[in-house]
Image (cartoon, rainbow, N blue to C red):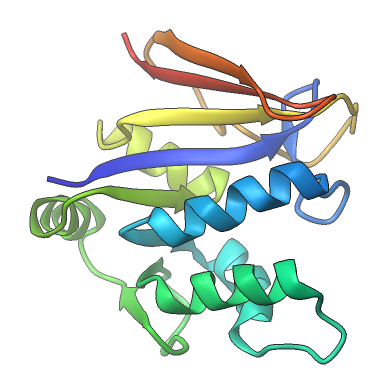
Length: 176
């Protein structure tokens, strides 16, 4: 059975904003390896549309951008949306019963399926489907954006902490 892991870059004040800060080269290499090892990615519409940038290789990309793009394109994607009518290559649209679809997805796969997007993660949290939360804590204060946790949730237990580079900590939590 696959494990659902919600992980995102987060500011010190608890926000994720895909356009306000980026990973360091060390952290980007970590995300390349993570993308290579994931069984799949489960996205909400908003983050999926942002990540579609990686569908087509760009002439100005360096080696690491090419490596991430290749890993992203190879990973199966499952996109939850009520408004999209189609999705790009290697992606499947989920537009029906979210709980049933995700339970089936977990049962049909082994390994890690990453969850992208705090709104989707909150819906999956409410259904008790997230197995692990990974906060990549950055030393920035945004003051606004989407909160990492989009609503209340049951208590969590710290599973591990790891320094990723000079400034970023990876905090991994599981439901208590």
